[in-house]
Image (cartoon, rainbow, N blue to C red; front, side, top):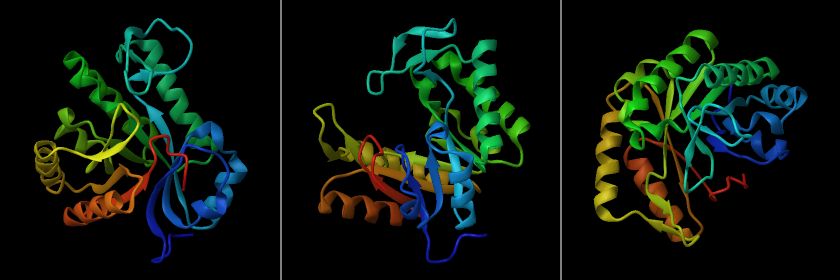
Length: 235
């Protein structure tokens, strides 16, 4: 069943259940382990297109030979050596497992490792290209990864601009980005508009004013917006 015109474009939800609420969206990004094949079949039967979360450069699992000592200060995952054969096999296995369960696409996260370890840029692109090759025709959506453009756009179908207008601060509050960062994000959005990708935005906001601000800016740049909390715990 195809999405209806009245459906909302996209949701990101890292909890479990809430199937009736998720059925209000055309696409939903979920964590693969949180949903059964039966639940995915129910969603697809209601016109929903489910995508599975997939990390390409950070590992939250037990110690492994591909992990670096340095961790992401915001999310806690260990940065990895993306070209390590063990890591590549794990990512491909997770991707196949999600698609075999019933997901119709993959949400490719943690592409920004090249901002921390520039030498990883070609390895991340290689992994995205490998996913494209091995999972086609599954839908691939990239999160950020601006240092990988324009090559990244050759291998994916959609792009998410996370934190386009609003930032989550280290004090646990949500604030609009400073003007200079907003201007840089506008420049990047302009580059994305030159591609053929479907474009989405995700902002974290907890007040009516911030939500209105985020919606206004996303609409300006043709980005389909979803707003949630940092943990993506509500839908």
